[in-house]
Image 1: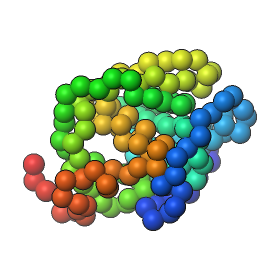
Image 2: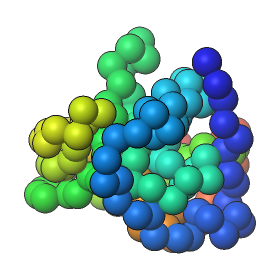
Image 3: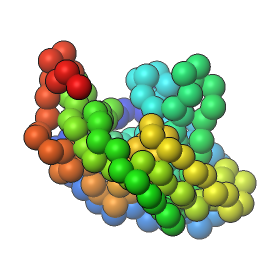
Length: 160
Ligand code: NI
């Protein structure tokens, strides 16, 4: 298990566009393993490669209660959304803070898996939110720019 350093808001790398992955390599396999380790260690539900300083289109997500259902998405692309949800969001790159963000309630994503085979992942609610949040990271976007009323401290979260 290898943990990578999570880059924090203010780090330029979090504002940059990521490049697609063209082929699976041992280096990228290791990166994906490390991203999963780093996400679980930080008790996050998602992590994007730029958050560990790598400008590649890779995200990992696990919204399962047990943390035993990882999703790995390479070169992910949102191909369909519907509905709307408004709720609290946080990010491992913005520790201790949360904000209210409106997103699609359903998202359908086309991506490659670790074997570079095409997969479709669909999700509602928390999974849809995680898919949209993580894919935003690959375009250099943080949820912070989408909050309705700015950031709040995690300890004084609004009652809703
Ligand atoms: Ni994030």
